[in-house]
Image (cartoon, rainbow, N blue to C red; front, side, top):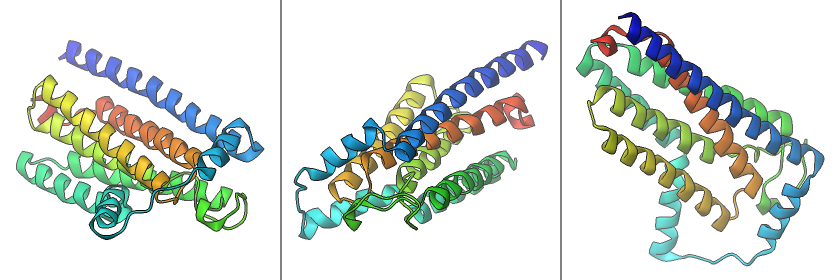
Length: 222
């Protein structure tokens, strides 16, 4: 038992270090946005590129891919899945982790959006403190955190092997990158918005995992 606790503490400490590094990445991107740094020049360069126009079924498909980062969809899927896992394994831990992740995401990302007030590319100008809600990207952070927590819950409670866990990780990365690419194509976010969203979503994801490692539930110990 002592060895198990020691191993889990080590995993928690490792997760906290990664979370801190990812949060530092978010702060660096935020600094670029606030000071109109070199990254913002890259935003403008990407924004000047011609964007392909998709109509009909292609446009519909593109919007549905974009929905993979939609807060309502990701939160609903995560909560329903967590409720099912909690019921099956007779523990509140999956639902508690899902709620914790959603509260942290909305608090941190929502507060950042309100404080920076960055306008979107579709507005035709890039300003901060202008009442916008562009930075950081909620779609990018939602995709990383919500799908990431879902994959983690399945890995922790579904008794999947390491290979399947890596496939789930690859799936989360694929969904997150897809959401970012679609956002750029649809002209809904600056590149730095998406980068900041990926950093903060990943930082919160790893932090929630660290919380889970710190105090294991009875079902996990068994």
